Image 1: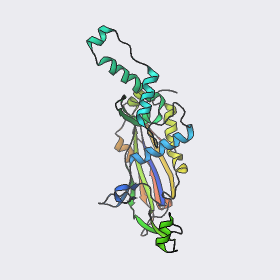
Image 2 (image 1 turned 180 degrees about the horizontal axis):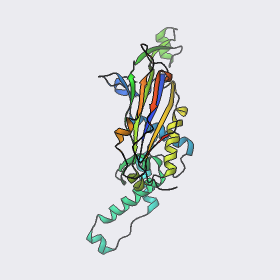
Image 3 (image 1 turned 90 degrees about the vertical axis):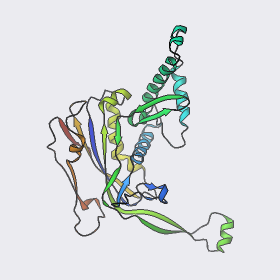
Image 4 (image 1 turned 30 degrees about the vertical axis):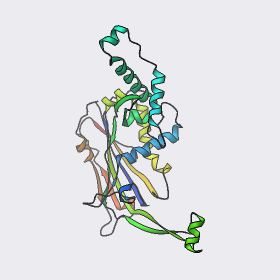
Length: 296
C-alpha cells in the first residue's frame, strides 16, 4: 500500500428503472424528491451504505477492511476492542500530576489510529467515535454530495395484492378471502448524478491508501449489482469520471471540473425511460495539472 499524494474529484452517474433508489421514512418511504423542483434525491449516507456493503461482501470482515457502521452493530464494542488492543498508556507519577488528562488524550489518539487501521469506512469516510469508551473523531478524506436526478422524476404509488394473510385471526376477519392490499413506491426512470471529493491531506492522516482508493472505484462500479431488491428494482452504475490533480493541494477548483461533465436530455417531447435518452459528454481539455480518467 502506498500513500495518496494527489487530490481527486469525481462525477458518478447511476440510474433507476421502476424502483425506489432511496425511500424517505418521513414520507411513507416514497422516493426522496426536492419539493420545489421534483428532482429526485439520493443521500450521501445511502451511497456510503452501498459502498460499505460491497467492501464487507468482498473482504468478509477481515482487517484492514472491517466495517464500523454496519447492520446491528454495537459501536462501543469496537471501541472497547480498540482500547484492549492498544493497552494502557503508561505515564510517570510526575507526568500524571502535571497533566491528569494527558494519559487519556494519548490513549484516545492511539485508539483512533487503531480504528483507522482496521476499519475501511473509518479511514475512508471518517466517524464520530466520542462515546463513553472514547476513540475520538476522524474526518474522512472521501466525501460525497447528495445525488440528484438530471430531470424531475414522477414518484408513483403502485397498489399490489398478497394472496395470503399473516395470522389465523386475520383470515377469519377476511372471511376466507385472504387477499390483502399493499403499496409499492417507484420511480419509472431517473438518471442521478453524484459528485465526490478525495483529500490527499486527510488521506495521509487516516491511512487511506492507493489500494483503498482502487477499492472505492471498484465499489462504485459494482455495488448496485449486489444490492438488488424488490424495492430498488433495476439500478445500474453508468459512468464514473475521475479528476486526478498532480499535487496534494490541487490545480483547479472542484466546481470547474464538475462542469466539464455535461448530461443533456436526448428524448425530445417524451419522458426519459432509458439511459440512452441522455447524451453524456466530458471535456477532456481539463485545466493544466488535472488528468481526466473515465473509470466506467
